[in-house]
Length: 73
Image 1 (tube, rainbow, N blue to C red):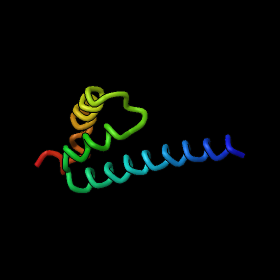
Image 2: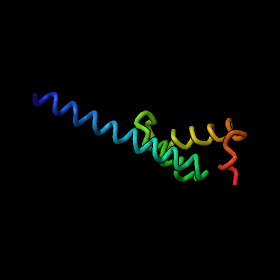
Image 3: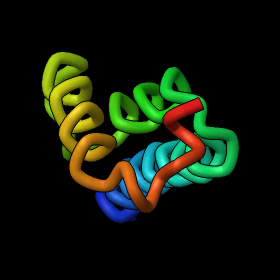
Image 4: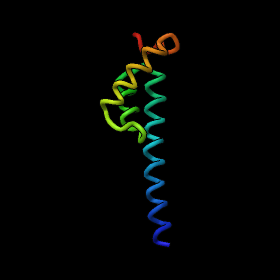
């Protein structure tokens, strides 16, 4: 039972981290806030560092600029 509790706690932590990423992503997308977009990427558990997050964000915004006009204000 103790092992199951530990696994549940670890999964809960991952779920909370992903949820924070999703909420920051939504806020960034709606507002066009690049700081919030950067925060979202750095909280993503699959992005290994802030350096990688910055590169991803720059590439994402450049590649999709016609779909993301809120970021060009």
